[in-house]
Every structure is written in structure tokens, then in C-alpha cells.
Length: 248
Ligand code: NDP
Ligand code: 8X3
Image (cartoon, rainbow, N blue to C red; front, top):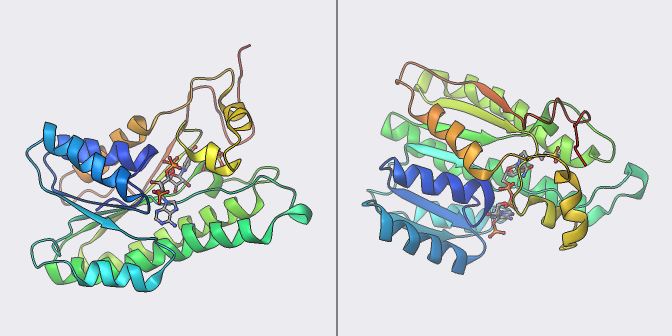
């Protein structure tokens, strides 16, 4: 099950999981994108695909979608908690309350709602692997990153906590933390301003969704006794959140 499969890292991950013979539950808010991804996968791979259309911020929708699954689909082996976003890039004293709410509700509470609904199914089934998409922004802060970084630091802490709670159930918990990946992320952050959205990637070769999907496939295909705790993946041109070598 991949949350946020309509674009970017989630879509690339769904495609690579299908290539690796996993049946898929793909989720997101934009149903037509999920339907067309389903068609794309079914044309190319011999796997089953189920579309679940919900907003991770809506606890009722999340619970209903998971509770309505048929017995077969309840055997979720892998959950990729990918749905997330940054909205705005502002000094803390100028930040927009609505942007803050959207990031906190999606990146922290949404991830918690989905995990709370799926983890009991994994425990019942006797196995599972939860992959949380964190960020370099959850390892170091940067100017104007304040609240987005806060949400990704929360994902980092929640991931570590989950790993302890899942220990006795044999459920693996992995955190994947990318640097700059060119997806719809920046367009969402800058609220549709495509010129501003290009700026973070200027003069560098950024990561792609496929690069992160590769890492996820690596983590979920290790032998059952091996858990990849945490991977930080950066473009070669990016040393950390602040040091980026741009060639113009
Ligand atoms: P995209 O904007 O391309 O994809 C985000 C996905 O999240 C979309 O499928 C979107 O689907 C989904 N999503 C957003 N809000 C909700 C919601 N409320 N309910 C359900 N789904 C939602 O960005 P990325 O692929 O880059 O981002 C994926 C993850 O990777 C995020 O958690 C992000 O923080 C993280 N990340 C991204 C980095 C980057 O540089 N791009 C770097 C490090 C981490 P829809 O709009 O259809 O609901
Ligand atoms: C996305 C990475 O550095 O653009 O999580 O915030 S960054």
C-alpha cells in the first residue's frame, strides 16, 4: 500500500513495486490520476491493483477505507507512508497559519491515522514492513523551513518509536530520507508558481522519484531478518540542507 501514489515518489514507488510483482493498493486524493496509474500498471504488469481514494487528513475516511477492505486485501505486507507536502517557505514570524495546519495535518497526523489503521492488520497477519518517507529536512533545519522541518523531525521520531513498538511483532520499520527530488513537491510548496518552483533545482541534477523508489525496493526486498533502519539519499550536488553546488 502506497499513500500519495498520484505523483512523484509515490507514483514511482508504485510502478517499481508492480515491476517487482507486488499487488498494490494505491491511494491519494486525485482519483483520476489513481485510475490512470492503475491502467498503466495493469497494461504492463501481471499484478492486482486496488484504488483507494481518501485524504489522509480525514480520520473517518482513512478508517472507512481500511475497514472496508476485503479479507485478501487486508493482508498488507508493506505500507509506504509517502503522502506529504511542504506549503510555503516563510520566516516563522511571517508564516501562514493555514500552511502550518496543512503540513502538520498531512505529514504528521495523516501518517499516524494511516499507520493506526494498518498496523493492527499487519500484527494480525503476523508480518509487515512500514516505510516512512522522512526527509533531510527531518535531520537538519534550514532558513524558512521551520514548520515543514518540524513535521519531518516528527516523522523521524515517530519512526523510531514505531520501530520499538513493532519489535515484538516482527514488523520492520524503515525511514527513507531524501534531499532534493524533482517532483510536484516544489509546485505545491510555491502554490502553483512554476517559476519559483524551478529555483531549488537550478544548476544541479536533482534526484528523481525513481531514485527514491529504488531505495524503497532495496529496503523491502532484504531477507526477513534484515531491517534497513534509515537511509539518507542526496543528489551528488547537495552535501546537506544548506550546501548545494550549483553550476551555471
Ligand atoms: P508530490 O507532490 O509529487 O507527491 C505528493 C503526494 O502526496 C501526492 O501523490 C499527493 O496526492 C499526496 N498527498 C498530499 N496531500 C495528501 C492528502 N492530504 N491526502 C492524501 N494524499 C496526499 O511530492 P513528492 O513525491 O516529492 O513527496 C512525497 C513525499 O516525499 C512527501 O512526504 C515529501 O515530504 C517527501 N519528500 C520530498 C522531497 C522532495 O524534494 N521532493 C524530499 C524529501 C522528502 P494528491 O494530491 O492526489 O492527494
Ligand atoms: C524536501 C527536502 O530540503 O526541499 O523534504 O525541504 S527540502
